[in-house]
Length: 389
Image 1 (tube, helix red, strand yellow):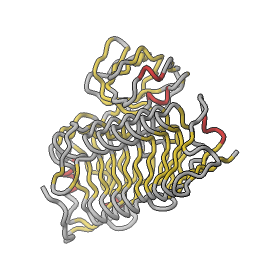
Image 2: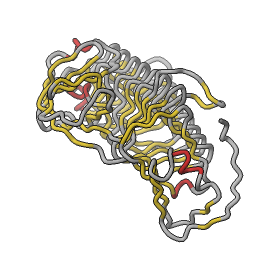
Image 3: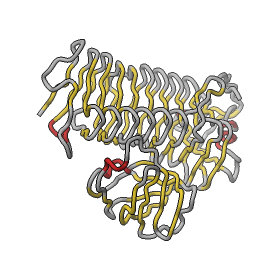
């Protein structure tokens, strides 16, 4: 269904906040959004679409097209926390976590590890995952790490690590997840997991990404948000659009975890873009002033962060990516002060084709960092890496 054009004709004006419940009042998020098509939402008024716990299957992406979308929020049910007591094992395709009590977790659920605590390269285990088996208090999940797990060595998890079951889950079959139309917005997207089927296609000109914010659109993420196992990217910010907030887990996707188109802006904390087939974050020409803090990007098929003509500040942990931890390319300027990179395939920090990259003394973390070109050496086309103590 092509929802690219919508003319606003309002017959109602809200005078107080409104809550719409899915599925109690409306069968889908789209039905709740469509019910507002002829309603003007004045400044200071918020419409909350509350989505109950449960699994929803959709065959068409959700379209946000309202002219007052910056006053509409979509909120899932609260996640359920579980205490991790250890890591039972790792295979090429699965991780198994031991929990103090796994009651309430079943095969097909989506679980999230936001903060990991332990020894070794435990950051590579962070992300959102689909549960494949439950045996007693042992929970096995599918992962898509693009480098051999054997390279992680010995990893342990302590009981400070919390696994959360995301209770509102949308399974996307032969479609994308959420689309913010050109020039439109949503005030908030919170506590919802979008799960793809791995398909790669375009529907009415929109690619099958988990979340796609159209050109000049805006979206705020909050809470426990996930976009996993899409055949294309987890989340995409279109040209001159803006995304911000707690971006969530964009893991195990066929392209990038998070993709920023030319002129897109980003301001986020606590994002995890692990185990994507290409880069964790790809930023071609991102808007100056973009800021990514407390970010994890490990086990991707290319780089943890790859910039192309971007101006951006990042504070990330990037390890075990096939190519590089952080790459500044084609006239990019990347301030990676406070970032850590280690055990990446070619280089931990890389700058080429008239680009610059600033790093600090913490860059080596567990192993000494590898720089391309070496610190203090000018590379091809006058690029370099600046080292700040």
